[in-house]
Image 1 (tube, rainbow, N blue to C red):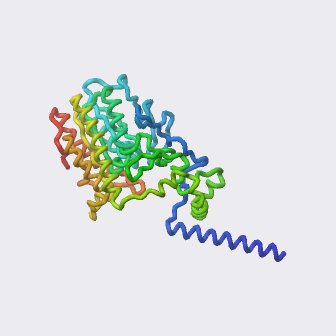
Image 2: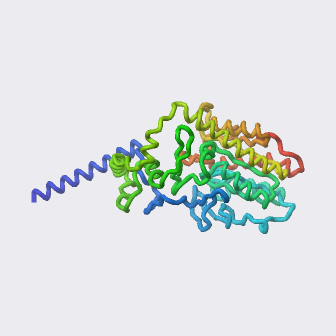
Image 3: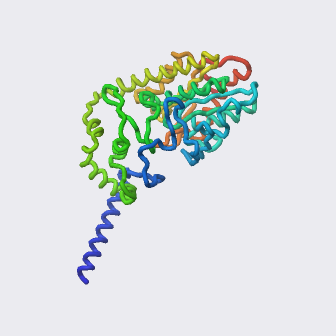
Length: 382
């Protein structure tokens, strides 16, 4: 009897210790491998709800319909967040003012409630002045390379009155990679070497690089990775087996100069992004269509304690410079945005208030066109 009592006491003490360690890791903000909302089996070898190729760019899966960033995604036959098809047959009458939107998750409307994204508000507000239609090709997790493909696809079909291109800071990194940049659940599909060579990772290597563990082989491992204690154990054990992934060993052996990201990688991203913007500019100019470049600031860029040396701040200023060099209209919402206009990190997108301010800026910018005038070189701040 005493043996069972001792065994029970040992098990109880172990459970109490595990609970205390779990609480301590939570207080230290140690991340679990798997987050709330993830389910087993964890898909690794396919893009998450998005299909990409060099011909059609990135689009949502045709049968995809779920909550994405607070927005229920209603996908049209072309794979975009819209109830209407993006086809010539679906276009309204010739006297309708047509807007083509190009961009990523900000353009898509992440973090805005239904009907509150800048695209939706702009369409609703301008529709009170004139017949209007908006085609929104914004896809989360994509760069200006995808925007170029969508411009090539839809400019000839839609023949819009104006094109609005959103550029965010992380586009400069995305634009150095192929369009299909992710495996499932935003696992980066590529690594960049010190000499800017693009290495395509295996799904297992991409998973390990993101989570620090191998993909779970069963549900028990998955549930273990939902806890902090289990995640710590998995990362420790799998770390000893890391050598089994030759690509991870190769990446670990890379030696990056201290200023590599800022002076090599980022500069290459600027040059590549500028090339994509110039191509979009040439496409629109060939059809006599004005192009508006929406410079999207990072949340830290609108704070009072603004650090212009931060990489994202430099990316934002690079967007402003590209718009000025290429000669397109610049829409710069930074002067009117404040920190509370963004959803808390790690989301970091505009909330309803932020989207509303951007919509007002774009509406004021496009208003002269509705009156038969030209676009200004810089959208006016109201």
